[in-house]
Amino acid sequence: MSRERDHNGRLVGVHDALIIGAGHAGLAASRLLAEQGVDHVVLERGEIANAWRTERWDSLRLLTPNWQTRLPGQAYEGDDPDGFMTVAELVELLENYARSNRAQLFTGTTVRSLSLDGDHYEVRTQRGRWRARSVILATGACNKPSIPAVAAELPGSIRQCSTLDYRSPAQMAAGGVLVVGASATGLQLADELLEAGHDVTLSVGEHVRMPRRYRGKDIFHWLERTGIHAERFDEVEDLTRGRRLPSPQLVGRGDLPMLDLNYLQDRGARLVGRLMTIREGRALCSGSLRNVCALADLKLDRLLDRIDDTADAEGAKPGERYAPTRLPGNTALGIDFAAEGITNVIWATGFKPDYHWLDVPVLDRKGQLVHEGGVVASPGLYTLGLPLMRRRSSSFIFGIEDDARDITRHLAGFLGHQHRRRSHGVHRNDARGPGMQQCA
Image (cartoon, rainbow, N blue to C red; front, side, top):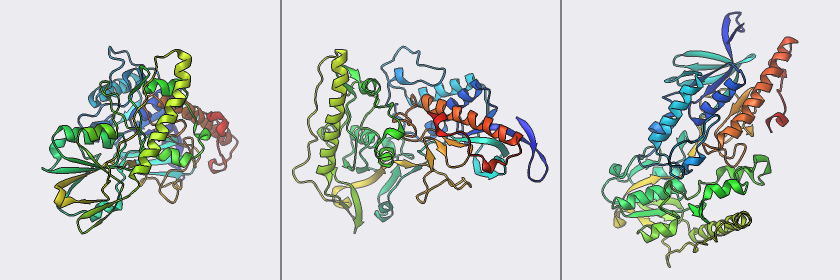
């Protein structure tokens, strides 16, 4: 850390870089900055891996197999490579990783604001202020549940919770449960609630159907081998849509070949379309269920066709194709909560980041961070851990290494560029930093 004078002439400490967030993304960036000799500090609002500790349900396991759980300088060395980590196991892994990094890490430090002050960013917390020439936002994309406005129209007798609040079926009131959302989370919770004896209705919108295993290998083996996960953000035809795709219908269990709508229907779940509105205690649902299921089936077949080309070349055993999604003959277009005994609603409708503390003009009109592959629209400001940020693998733990290497390399280049301009008396606001070619 160096000491420079602020705009009032006071001597203040200035770090080269500051990382907000001590989850897997922030810790990975810290490791790589240390390798490059970049002075930095890490701030975390709670404990290490705070979101995993406090905002996940009890039975959750990672969607990725253990062999794929890797971070810069650390690979899985356990005796169950094809298993799936529990939350407790992941938290322990991240704690050990943080200790091996030996970075300046301040837990229990909530960032209240981040602003640009002359040549530096100023970060205000309840424990004081930090100043840095560059900042990495490693706070993730799952800070707030994305709950539709229709939630406010539900009858007061219905117990509602988001997937950030849900821990186990014990939270549910006696009676049926409406799970809204059919991504990985929605299906996993529906399965768990059925096992606990609840009647479950699943409101289905756009979803990504995917098998756990195919042609003798975990699906993530094939997503790596085909190069799908390595596809870059600037190669995706519709990037905005790609970043909004729901997580694939998977579960961290090796004994279940496929967690999909057919499996849940076999267990007793009822399917309805996307929840549209509430009128007089009755939910009205979209009539597009058949279409969204047909589209998911089509995309699954296209994915398996692509995998088959690679698997055939590798001599993998023949693959099994999956039956189309079955639908009830007369799909219900409404739900009468009282008549059907539904007393609970779980909103498995995704998440959104929380940037209310950013006092830098880098958000679009919808409150989304404006960035190009993690390089934010303010010199020296970066982000990590967002969906399809630089690659299709960006939101997975194993995918953070490549993204973090690109971002920290760009950051180091920016610091060198900024130092050269300061040496020549050029104000920071005139500096744009290194171009995107350095972040390839």
